[in-house]
Image (cartoon, rainbow over all chains, first blue to last red):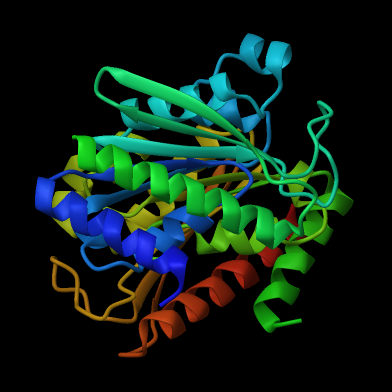
Length: 162
Length: 162
C-alpha cells in the first residue's frame, strides 16, 4: 500500500471509530483526493464526496466563495482554502472538511502564484483554518501527491482532535 | 495514451472548438472522471469541476436531488442520473454536464442494485437525458472504467451536437 493510501485508510479508520463523516473541496487535485479516500474501507458510509471547483469561475458558483476575495487575493491563498473547506461543510452532511487549492503546473496561475504553491483548508463545527505550502517547481503529479499527503495528514490530526 | 485519456482529450478538444465548458457529477467514480478530464489540454479553461456525491445523503444536500426520488427509485436509476447532470449544470457556469451513478462494488447497493449497474446522465440547456447500463459483476476498477468510457463517449457526442 502506498503512503497516500495508508493515510486515506487511517482517516477513514478514525472517522469510523469516532462516528464522523468527511467531505473534500478540491481545485488543483481535481477530484483525486476524493477518489483516493473512496478506496478506503468504510468510505461508502463516511465519505460524502467532494466539491471540485477547478476553474476560478466555479468557486463562487459551486461553493459560494466571494468573488471579491478571489479578485483581491487570487484563488491560491489561505483565506480561499479556509472558505472552500467551510463551504463544503455547510453544503454537505459532513462533520469535517478538507480543501486543496494550488498550482500543480506546468504553468504559474493567472495571479502569478508559482508552481508548487498549495493552500490547504480545514473545517469542522466552529473552527476553520488555512495553511500555505510551497513545494517548489515539481512535476504536476508530484505537486498533487505532496498536497494530498499534507491534506490527509492534517485531516487525520483534525479527526483525532474531534 | 489510454483509450480513456484519448476520449478525455477529444472532449476538451471539441469544447475548445465550440467554446463550451464542462462539469461532471459523480457518485461511484468518486471524482475520477473529473481528474481524468483535468489532465487533458485546455481543461484549466473548460473544465469547471465536479460535484462528487458519494453517499446517498449528500445527493440532496450538495445537488438538491429530491429525497422522494431517492426513496422511490434508489440512487442508481436514470432519473437520478439525469437530475444530477441537470443540477450540476444549474450550480456551475458550465454549458454541458455529464453524470455517473452506479454500483462499482464489491457489494450490491442498499437498494438491491447489482454490481455493474450504472446510470449516466447528460444535460445542456433545455435537454436532459438518463441512460442505464449493466456491465455485469466486474471488478470495481473495471466497472468505473466502463462507466467513464461510456460517459465520455456520450459527452463527446453531446458536444458535437451543440
